[in-house]
Length: 246
Image 1: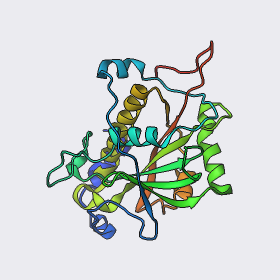
Image 2 (image 1 turned 180 degrees about the vertical axis):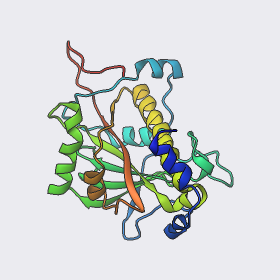
Image 3 (image 1 turned 90 degrees about the vertical axis):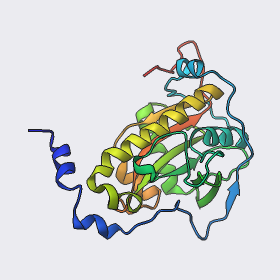
C-alpha cells in the first residue's frame, strides 16, 4: 500500500486523456503584447558558499523600488536560457525530459521604470511583456500573497510560476505533477540564491493559493495552472531582523 497521490500517478501515467492537451514545444508568448528587452546583466560576483549562507526568508520589506537592472540580473542569472546554448535550449536547472513546462510571471508593485501590473517573462529572449495594468483584482492578489508573511508592506514584485501541461503531459502523463513541482523548486532555489548574492530579500510562498492565482494570471486551472511563487524586494532591517534561515 502506498500514499494515494502516488497510486494516482502510477495509474494515470499512460492514458488516452493525456493526448487531449495537444503538444506545444515552444515557450509561451502573448501575441498582442509588446515585450521589453531587459538590460544586459552579469552574474553576481559572489562565491556560492557565501550566497548559500546568506540565503534567508525575508518576511518584511521596505516600501522602496528595486531597479530594472537588478530585476534583469536576478532573472537573467537564475532562470534565463543559457547564452552557451547550442541547438537544444539549456538552463542552469534541470527539467524532466528537457521540456521546461514552467512559465514565469511578474506581479509588479514597484520596480523602477515599470508600470505596476502583471508581466510575462520570456526566459528565451530575456524580456518582459505587460499583460494587464494594475487593477482591483491584481491588488487583491497581491494582498492574498502577502497573508502568509504577516506584514503590511508589499514587496517590489512577486515572481509567479505556472505549468503548461501541453508541453510535457503527452510524454509523462500524470507524472508531470511531481516533475513540475520539482522543477519549480529548482527554479525557486536559483532565484533565492541569486537574490542572496545580490543582497535582495526573497521569500517563497507555499500557501495553497491556486484558485486566486489562476484567476489573477488568467489561467484556466486545467491546461495551465499556478504552482509556486516568491516575493522579492528590499529587506527591512532592524534589531529584530525578520529574516529566517528556513
